[in-house]
Amino acid sequence: MKFDENKKQALKETLKDLLMISSPSGKERYMTAHIKPLVEPYAEEVFYDNYGNLIVKVGGKGEKLMLCAHADELGYWVKTITEDGFLNVTKVSIPDKCVEARQVMVNGTIPGIVGTKAAHLQTPEERLKLVNPREIFIDIGVSSKAEAEALGVRTGSYASPVYNYMEMANPDLICCRALDDRAGCAVLIELLKNIDKNALQYELYIVFTLQEEVGLRGATAAVNYLCPDKMIAVDTVPCADTPGMNWKRDLPVQLGHGLVCSLSEGMGPMNFIHPEMEEKIFGLSAKYEIPVQPLSLCGFSASTDALAGSIQGRGVTAATLTIPRRYSHSPVELMHINDALAMLEMLTRFVAE
Image (cartoon, rainbow, N blue to C red; front, side):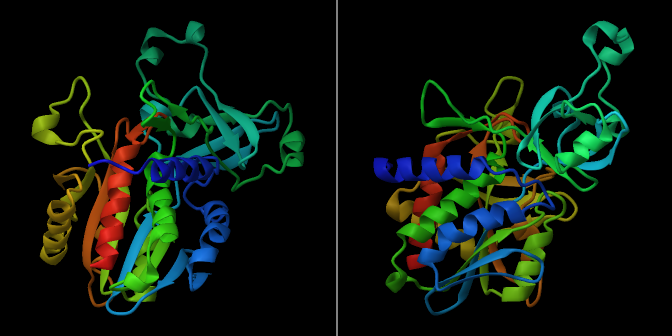
């Protein structure tokens, strides 16, 4: 499928803009506050629910359809500040291998470093061990607790890896931290800008959810608030087409081959796509030649807002559509912009038919 270059550039610019904002789980208001004025010109109503999810009422009539993408990212929370100004922190969903020796931004504006013991001082045993979660600290370059507090740092402050947007030799390949799920958020914003409200076949709501990374909590609240008939979780998915992986057997997803439709996901509990959604998604794929990669994620610790949202209230007819990215939950996630454009095309067709 050939994608519109103007849509590609617009999506890139929206994505780059969102990636500049730091919003780990629990601090999503910085992201939702940034998104709110971007979507207001295209919506009938924009508001927060009681939990804090940002809800965009788009318009239309018919069954109520909720499209959602999560506004949180991986990060750190400050537990305490030492007398000499170091920040003792808890990591939020960051894999153990990706913790030490990272540049971060504290409270979105203060440069910091996740400290690591100098390699020259480590014992052979220490060099093979991951950092103890209780020993993670951030150095913000001050010498006292008072200096840290003067900068606005306190218990409950937050940090995330620095903005590190980079396009590869092929500029359609984009690397950055927090593509999960800034990519999904960007697609929904561009969808809102481009859809014809007069063609909507649903009463459409777009929701930017909270705390997906720590338990799919925002989607649970949003579904109970809106009581949609149908929902689609718009997210990203691990991509295993790299050395050392048996990707054809375990995770047959490739960059640049289209969006992914998860037919199943999770491990205790598991979630399965509703047959009605599966039929419509693959029917649109065939009709408009939209590239879609089918995937079964049962048995993997990978799940989306659809897993929690689909069983709330009266139950919801649900599906998960995702954008592939390599090196998931690391500061160097990698995606192909055409996969996001395929997602945009699929959602544009879905809401109009």
